[in-house]
Amino acid sequence: MAMTEFLSFVPIFSDLQPETLEKIEMIGSRRSYKKNDVILMEEESGTALFVIITGKVKVARTSGDGREVILTILTDSDFFGEMAILDGFARSANVVAIEDTELFLLQRNDFMNLLRDHPEISIILLQELTKRLRAADIKIKALSLKDAEGKVATVILQLADEIGKIKQGKVEIEKLPLQQDLANMAGTSRETISRTLHSFAKKGLVELEGSKLKILDYEKFKGMFI
Ligand code: CMP
Image 1 (spheres, helix red, strand yellow):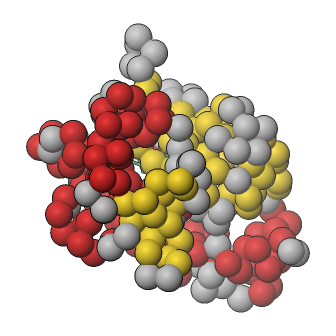
Image 2 (image 1 turned 180 degrees about the horizontal axis):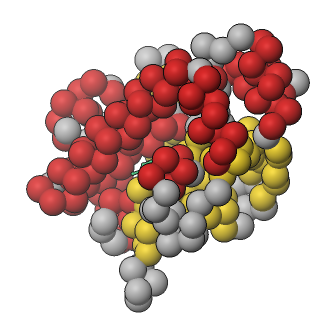
């Protein structure tokens, strides 16, 4: 796919004219990362904004003793790195490739000029940041108020939104993250993840097949736990 065609599918650039997309292609650059490469580190200063061309990354924070909480997983056409660019403070989290990943980079000044020249980008950016704040609110509620089932269900629903596909009325997550990663997303242990997923399967709420998970009735599942 040509770069301008790819850029036209990126939500924050989707309202722009072809000439502007060509300009963005000219001022940006591409960079490839291998699975497990660290792309950004918490506390570094920020100089660029990134858009995922292909691949997947996890956004995570770590504690001094090496424990990790995964805030979100981002995939094709998602952007990251906007926070340090916008407020000038340090990177708020680590971003690590969880698959081989190709990124499109825009330097801070170029991105800020684009926002000034094309306010329509700012509107979509604000909508996406609002969506992320809503997701973070759901996560805070799950971490502070919910029992193990509620925490695990919240993570499954979050993944369904981020990487799920609707197939024959069921929401399918093709490749569930490793159980330890799920535990780090849910703020619980690997054993609890395993136990709870099997209990959901037994109750007929989900189907598990290797690393594939299907939510059999998405609305019902959401209604039970969110
Ligand atoms: P920045 O702080 O520059 O670098 C880390 C990036 O991770 C951050 O920008 C956001 O793009 C992304 N990020 C941080 N927290 C979240 C979150 N809760 N949900 C989605 N993305 C996030």
